[in-house]
Image 1 (tube, rainbow, N blue to C red):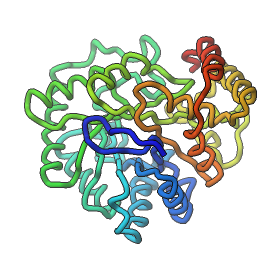
Image 2 (tube, rainbow, N blue to C red; image 1 turned 30 degrees about the horizontal axis):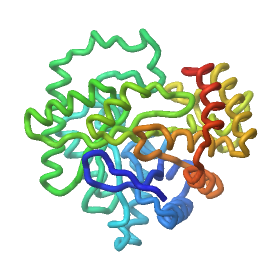
Image 3 (cartoon, rainbow, N blue to C red; image 1 turned 30 degrees about the vertical axis):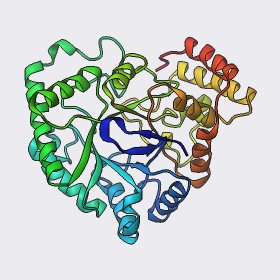
Length: 350
Protein backbone atom coordinates (compact mmCIF):
# COMPACT_ATOMS: atom_id res chain seq x y z
CA UNK A 1 0.00 0.00 0.00
CA UNK A 2 1.21 3.47 -0.88
CA UNK A 3 0.68 6.48 1.39
CA UNK A 4 0.38 10.24 0.91
CA UNK A 5 0.44 13.28 3.16
CA UNK A 6 -3.02 14.57 4.04
CA UNK A 7 -2.47 18.16 2.99
CA UNK A 8 -0.90 20.31 5.69
CA UNK A 9 -2.08 18.00 8.50
CA UNK A 10 1.12 15.99 8.81
CA UNK A 11 -0.94 12.79 8.73
CA UNK A 12 0.02 9.96 6.37
CA UNK A 13 -2.98 8.29 4.74
CA UNK A 14 -3.26 5.28 2.46
CA UNK A 15 -3.85 6.00 -1.22
CA UNK A 16 -7.06 4.00 -0.78
CA UNK A 17 -9.73 5.31 1.60
CA UNK A 18 -12.43 2.89 2.71
CA UNK A 19 -15.86 4.43 2.18
CA UNK A 20 -18.70 3.22 4.36
CA UNK A 21 -21.96 4.74 3.13
CA UNK A 22 -23.66 1.39 2.38
CA UNK A 23 -23.18 0.15 5.94
CA UNK A 24 -26.56 0.24 7.58
CA UNK A 25 -28.56 -0.03 4.37
CA UNK A 26 -27.03 -2.53 1.94
CA UNK A 27 -24.58 -3.94 4.50
CA UNK A 28 -25.08 -5.17 8.07
CA UNK A 29 -22.64 -5.03 10.99
CA UNK A 30 -20.99 -8.38 10.24
CA UNK A 31 -20.26 -7.39 6.63
CA UNK A 32 -18.90 -4.00 7.71
CA UNK A 33 -16.64 -5.74 10.25
CA UNK A 34 -15.28 -7.97 7.49
CA UNK A 35 -14.60 -5.00 5.22
CA UNK A 36 -12.82 -3.05 7.97
CA UNK A 37 -10.63 -5.96 8.96
CA UNK A 38 -9.73 -6.82 5.37
CA UNK A 39 -8.92 -3.19 4.57
CA UNK A 40 -6.67 -2.84 7.61
CA UNK A 41 -4.89 -6.07 6.66
CA UNK A 42 -4.14 -4.56 3.23
CA UNK A 43 -2.55 -1.49 4.81
CA UNK A 44 -5.53 0.86 4.47
CA UNK A 45 -5.53 3.26 7.42
CA UNK A 46 -8.13 5.79 6.20
CA UNK A 47 -11.89 5.31 6.74
CA UNK A 48 -14.52 7.84 5.66
CA UNK A 49 -18.07 8.17 6.91
CA UNK A 50 -20.69 10.86 7.62
CA UNK A 51 -23.47 11.59 10.07
CA UNK A 52 -25.91 11.49 7.13
CA UNK A 53 -25.10 7.87 6.21
CA UNK A 54 -26.33 5.27 5.35
CA UNK A 55 -27.42 6.07 1.80
CA UNK A 56 -29.85 6.67 0.29
CA UNK A 57 -30.24 9.11 3.19
CA UNK A 58 -33.38 8.69 5.27
CA UNK A 59 -34.44 9.68 8.75
CA UNK A 60 -34.47 6.00 9.71
CA UNK A 61 -30.85 5.33 8.64
CA UNK A 62 -29.41 8.70 9.77
CA UNK A 63 -26.30 8.05 11.89
CA UNK A 64 -26.45 4.29 11.37
CA UNK A 65 -23.08 4.00 9.60
CA UNK A 66 -21.27 5.86 12.37
CA UNK A 67 -22.95 3.51 14.87
CA UNK A 68 -21.67 0.48 12.96
CA UNK A 69 -18.11 1.84 12.97
CA UNK A 70 -18.50 2.67 16.66
CA UNK A 71 -19.62 -0.88 17.37
CA UNK A 72 -16.45 -2.22 15.75
CA UNK A 73 -14.26 0.29 17.62
CA UNK A 74 -15.91 -0.66 20.93
CA UNK A 75 -14.77 -4.24 20.37
CA UNK A 76 -11.30 -3.24 19.15
CA UNK A 77 -10.30 -0.13 21.14
CA UNK A 78 -6.64 -1.05 20.88
CA UNK A 79 -6.81 -0.53 17.09
CA UNK A 80 -8.17 3.02 17.17
CA UNK A 81 -4.67 4.46 16.69
CA UNK A 82 -4.29 2.49 13.44
CA UNK A 83 -7.13 4.41 11.78
CA UNK A 84 -7.37 7.92 10.37
CA UNK A 85 -11.11 8.32 10.91
CA UNK A 86 -12.98 10.91 8.87
CA UNK A 87 -16.61 11.91 9.20
CA UNK A 88 -18.79 14.78 7.98
CA UNK A 89 -21.43 17.17 9.25
CA UNK A 90 -24.42 17.42 6.91
CA UNK A 91 -25.08 20.79 5.33
CA UNK A 92 -28.51 22.44 5.20
CA UNK A 93 -31.58 21.00 3.54
CA UNK A 94 -32.46 17.71 5.25
CA UNK A 95 -35.44 18.39 7.53
CA UNK A 96 -34.69 15.52 9.91
CA UNK A 97 -31.14 16.80 10.57
CA UNK A 98 -31.33 19.89 12.80
CA UNK A 99 -34.52 20.94 10.95
CA UNK A 100 -32.53 21.49 7.77
CA UNK A 101 -30.75 24.52 9.27
CA UNK A 102 -27.53 25.97 7.80
CA UNK A 103 -24.16 25.12 9.27
CA UNK A 104 -23.42 27.25 12.33
CA UNK A 105 -21.40 27.13 15.52
CA UNK A 106 -24.38 25.62 17.32
CA UNK A 107 -24.86 22.87 14.73
CA UNK A 108 -21.14 22.01 14.72
CA UNK A 109 -20.98 21.64 18.51
CA UNK A 110 -24.07 19.41 18.50
CA UNK A 111 -23.01 17.34 15.50
CA UNK A 112 -19.45 16.72 16.71
CA UNK A 113 -20.67 15.46 20.08
CA UNK A 114 -23.29 13.25 18.45
CA UNK A 115 -20.76 11.76 16.02
CA UNK A 116 -18.28 11.07 18.82
CA UNK A 117 -20.99 9.24 20.74
CA UNK A 118 -22.05 7.14 17.75
CA UNK A 119 -18.45 6.39 16.78
CA UNK A 120 -17.56 5.51 20.39
CA UNK A 121 -14.30 7.41 20.18
CA UNK A 122 -12.78 10.42 21.96
CA UNK A 123 -11.60 12.17 18.79
CA UNK A 124 -12.19 12.49 15.06
CA UNK A 125 -9.09 12.74 12.90
CA UNK A 126 -10.70 14.61 10.00
CA UNK A 127 -14.00 16.46 10.40
CA UNK A 128 -15.47 17.56 7.07
CA UNK A 129 -18.23 19.96 6.05
CA UNK A 130 -20.35 17.69 3.84
CA UNK A 131 -21.56 20.58 1.66
CA UNK A 132 -21.58 24.37 2.10
CA UNK A 133 -24.45 26.59 3.15
CA UNK A 134 -24.48 28.16 -0.32
CA UNK A 135 -25.48 26.27 -3.47
CA UNK A 136 -22.44 24.97 -5.36
CA UNK A 137 -21.96 23.32 -8.79
CA UNK A 138 -22.09 19.80 -7.36
CA UNK A 139 -24.74 17.06 -7.37
CA UNK A 140 -25.38 17.46 -11.11
CA UNK A 141 -25.41 21.28 -10.97
CA UNK A 142 -22.20 21.67 -12.99
CA UNK A 143 -23.70 22.87 -16.30
CA UNK A 144 -23.72 26.64 -17.07
CA UNK A 145 -26.83 28.40 -15.84
CA UNK A 146 -27.69 25.82 -13.18
CA UNK A 147 -26.23 27.90 -10.34
CA UNK A 148 -26.43 31.70 -10.26
CA UNK A 149 -23.27 32.70 -8.42
CA UNK A 150 -24.05 36.42 -8.57
CA UNK A 151 -27.03 35.86 -6.26
CA UNK A 152 -24.75 34.64 -3.47
CA UNK A 153 -24.16 37.26 -0.77
CA UNK A 154 -20.39 37.15 -0.36
CA UNK A 155 -20.29 38.99 2.97
CA UNK A 156 -23.08 36.90 4.50
CA UNK A 157 -21.45 33.60 3.57
CA UNK A 158 -18.00 34.78 4.57
CA UNK A 159 -19.36 35.66 8.02
CA UNK A 160 -20.96 32.22 8.27
CA UNK A 161 -17.65 30.62 7.32
CA UNK A 162 -15.84 32.60 10.01
CA UNK A 163 -18.36 31.40 12.60
CA UNK A 164 -17.83 27.82 11.39
CA UNK A 165 -14.04 28.19 11.67
CA UNK A 166 -14.31 29.56 15.19
CA UNK A 167 -16.50 26.64 16.23
CA UNK A 168 -14.13 24.12 14.65
CA UNK A 169 -11.26 25.78 16.50
CA UNK A 170 -13.09 25.32 19.80
CA UNK A 171 -13.60 21.64 19.01
CA UNK A 172 -9.91 21.28 18.20
CA UNK A 173 -8.86 23.04 21.39
CA UNK A 174 -11.08 20.60 23.29
CA UNK A 175 -9.38 17.65 21.58
CA UNK A 176 -12.56 16.47 19.87
CA UNK A 177 -11.26 16.82 16.32
CA UNK A 178 -7.70 16.98 15.00
CA UNK A 179 -8.16 18.54 11.55
CA UNK A 180 -10.97 19.75 9.34
CA UNK A 181 -11.71 19.51 5.65
CA UNK A 182 -14.24 20.53 3.03
CA UNK A 183 -16.49 18.53 0.75
CA UNK A 184 -18.50 19.43 -2.35
CA UNK A 185 -16.94 22.88 -2.39
CA UNK A 186 -15.16 25.07 -4.94
CA UNK A 187 -11.92 27.05 -5.39
CA UNK A 188 -13.66 30.11 -3.95
CA UNK A 189 -14.73 28.12 -0.90
CA UNK A 190 -11.21 26.78 -0.37
CA UNK A 191 -9.61 30.18 -0.72
CA UNK A 192 -12.14 32.00 1.45
CA UNK A 193 -11.54 29.56 4.28
CA UNK A 194 -7.77 29.91 3.84
CA UNK A 195 -8.03 33.70 3.86
CA UNK A 196 -10.20 33.74 6.98
CA UNK A 197 -7.91 31.23 8.65
CA UNK A 198 -4.86 33.36 8.06
CA UNK A 199 -6.55 36.64 8.97
CA UNK A 200 -8.02 35.38 12.25
CA UNK A 201 -5.34 32.82 13.16
CA UNK A 202 -7.77 29.92 12.97
CA UNK A 203 -7.33 26.33 11.67
CA UNK A 204 -6.97 25.91 7.92
CA UNK A 205 -8.70 23.20 5.88
CA UNK A 206 -6.38 20.29 5.09
CA UNK A 207 -8.51 18.49 2.50
CA UNK A 208 -11.44 18.60 0.12
CA UNK A 209 -13.61 15.66 -0.88
CA UNK A 210 -15.34 16.08 -4.25
CA UNK A 211 -16.89 13.84 -6.86
CA UNK A 212 -14.28 12.83 -9.44
CA UNK A 213 -14.21 10.09 -12.08
CA UNK A 214 -13.78 9.44 -15.78
CA UNK A 215 -17.40 10.56 -16.17
CA UNK A 216 -17.09 13.60 -13.91
CA UNK A 217 -13.64 15.24 -13.96
CA UNK A 218 -14.76 18.87 -13.71
CA UNK A 219 -12.27 19.62 -10.90
CA UNK A 220 -9.37 19.09 -13.31
CA UNK A 221 -7.43 21.28 -13.74
CA UNK A 222 -8.46 24.40 -11.85
CA UNK A 223 -9.59 23.15 -8.44
CA UNK A 224 -6.89 20.48 -8.29
CA UNK A 225 -4.19 23.01 -9.21
CA UNK A 226 -5.51 25.15 -6.34
CA UNK A 227 -5.23 22.16 -3.99
CA UNK A 228 -1.66 21.37 -4.98
CA UNK A 229 -0.36 24.89 -4.45
CA UNK A 230 -2.32 25.49 -1.23
CA UNK A 231 -1.38 22.09 0.27
CA UNK A 232 -4.96 20.80 0.33
CA UNK A 233 -5.41 17.03 0.00
CA UNK A 234 -7.76 16.11 -2.85
CA UNK A 235 -10.02 13.13 -2.05
CA UNK A 236 -12.19 11.87 -4.93
CA UNK A 237 -15.54 10.36 -4.05
CA UNK A 238 -17.52 8.15 -6.42
CA UNK A 239 -14.52 7.26 -8.62
CA UNK A 240 -16.71 4.60 -10.28
CA UNK A 241 -19.49 7.12 -10.94
CA UNK A 242 -21.90 5.40 -8.52
CA UNK A 243 -20.99 2.09 -10.13
CA UNK A 244 -21.63 3.12 -13.74
CA UNK A 245 -17.99 2.63 -14.76
CA UNK A 246 -18.11 -1.06 -13.82
CA UNK A 247 -20.49 -1.58 -16.73
CA UNK A 248 -23.13 -3.32 -14.60
CA UNK A 249 -25.78 -0.74 -15.52
CA UNK A 250 -25.00 -0.68 -19.24
CA UNK A 251 -27.97 -0.45 -21.61
CA UNK A 252 -30.51 -0.10 -18.83
CA UNK A 253 -29.50 -3.04 -16.65
CA UNK A 254 -30.54 -2.72 -13.00
CA UNK A 255 -29.20 -5.68 -10.98
CA UNK A 256 -31.29 -6.53 -7.90
CA UNK A 257 -29.88 -5.00 -4.74
CA UNK A 258 -27.57 -2.63 -6.58
CA UNK A 259 -27.54 1.10 -5.91
CA UNK A 260 -29.34 1.93 -9.14
CA UNK A 261 -32.21 -0.32 -8.10
CA UNK A 262 -33.00 2.29 -5.43
CA UNK A 263 -34.76 5.59 -6.11
CA UNK A 264 -33.00 8.24 -8.21
CA UNK A 265 -31.41 10.94 -6.03
CA UNK A 266 -30.10 14.35 -7.17
CA UNK A 267 -29.22 13.00 -10.60
CA UNK A 268 -26.43 10.91 -9.06
CA UNK A 269 -27.08 7.77 -11.05
CA UNK A 270 -25.55 9.12 -14.26
CA UNK A 271 -28.00 7.24 -16.46
CA UNK A 272 -27.83 9.37 -19.60
CA UNK A 273 -27.44 8.30 -23.19
CA UNK A 274 -23.97 9.86 -23.43
CA UNK A 275 -22.84 8.26 -20.16
CA UNK A 276 -23.93 4.89 -21.50
CA UNK A 277 -21.91 5.46 -24.67
CA UNK A 278 -18.85 6.57 -22.69
CA UNK A 279 -18.99 3.55 -20.39
CA UNK A 280 -19.31 1.24 -23.38
CA UNK A 281 -16.11 2.70 -24.84
CA UNK A 282 -14.22 2.46 -21.53
CA UNK A 283 -15.23 -1.21 -21.29
CA UNK A 284 -13.55 -1.79 -24.65
CA UNK A 285 -10.35 -0.13 -23.41
CA UNK A 286 -10.37 -2.27 -20.26
CA UNK A 287 -10.89 -5.48 -22.24
CA UNK A 288 -8.13 -4.55 -24.70
CA UNK A 289 -5.63 -4.19 -21.85
CA UNK A 290 -6.90 -7.14 -19.78
CA UNK A 291 -8.15 -5.01 -16.91
CA UNK A 292 -11.55 -5.10 -15.26
CA UNK A 293 -13.58 -1.93 -15.87
CA UNK A 294 -13.35 -1.05 -12.17
CA UNK A 295 -9.59 -1.48 -12.17
CA UNK A 296 -9.24 0.76 -15.21
CA UNK A 297 -11.33 3.55 -13.66
CA UNK A 298 -9.74 3.38 -10.21
CA UNK A 299 -6.16 3.10 -11.48
CA UNK A 300 -6.83 6.12 -13.71
CA UNK A 301 -8.12 8.12 -10.76
CA UNK A 302 -5.12 7.19 -8.62
CA UNK A 303 -2.60 8.41 -11.20
CA UNK A 304 -4.14 11.90 -11.60
CA UNK A 305 -1.65 14.50 -10.41
CA UNK A 306 -2.90 16.00 -7.15
CA UNK A 307 -5.06 13.08 -5.99
CA UNK A 308 -4.17 12.17 -2.40
CA UNK A 309 -6.46 9.24 -1.57
CA UNK A 310 -9.39 7.79 -3.51
CA UNK A 311 -12.54 6.82 -1.61
CA UNK A 312 -13.84 3.40 -2.60
CA UNK A 313 -16.90 1.50 -1.44
CA UNK A 314 -18.23 -2.00 -1.90
CA UNK A 315 -21.29 -4.00 -0.95
CA UNK A 316 -19.48 -7.35 -0.95
CA UNK A 317 -15.97 -8.67 -0.40
CA UNK A 318 -15.41 -9.60 -4.04
CA UNK A 319 -15.97 -5.98 -5.05
CA UNK A 320 -13.77 -4.71 -2.23
CA UNK A 321 -10.87 -6.97 -3.15
CA UNK A 322 -11.10 -6.04 -6.83
CA UNK A 323 -11.23 -2.34 -6.01
CA UNK A 324 -8.25 -2.43 -3.67
CA UNK A 325 -6.29 -4.50 -6.18
CA UNK A 326 -6.83 -1.78 -8.78
CA UNK A 327 -4.35 0.46 -6.98
CA UNK A 328 -1.56 -2.03 -7.68
CA UNK A 329 -1.91 -1.39 -11.42
CA UNK A 330 0.30 1.13 -13.16
CA UNK A 331 -1.31 2.25 -16.39
CA UNK A 332 0.97 2.20 -19.40
CA UNK A 333 1.32 5.05 -21.86
CA UNK A 334 -0.80 3.12 -24.36
CA UNK A 335 -3.58 2.57 -21.83
CA UNK A 336 -3.57 6.27 -21.00
CA UNK A 337 -3.68 7.15 -24.69
CA UNK A 338 -6.70 4.90 -25.20
CA UNK A 339 -8.44 6.31 -22.11
CA UNK A 340 -7.81 9.88 -23.24
CA UNK A 341 -9.23 9.19 -26.69
CA UNK A 342 -12.53 8.19 -25.05
CA UNK A 343 -12.44 10.99 -22.49
CA UNK A 344 -12.08 13.64 -25.19
CA UNK A 345 -15.22 12.35 -26.88
CA UNK A 346 -17.21 12.36 -23.62
CA UNK A 347 -15.73 14.97 -21.27
CA UNK A 348 -19.01 15.73 -19.47
CA UNK A 349 -21.56 13.07 -20.42
CA UNK A 350 -24.25 13.81 -17.85
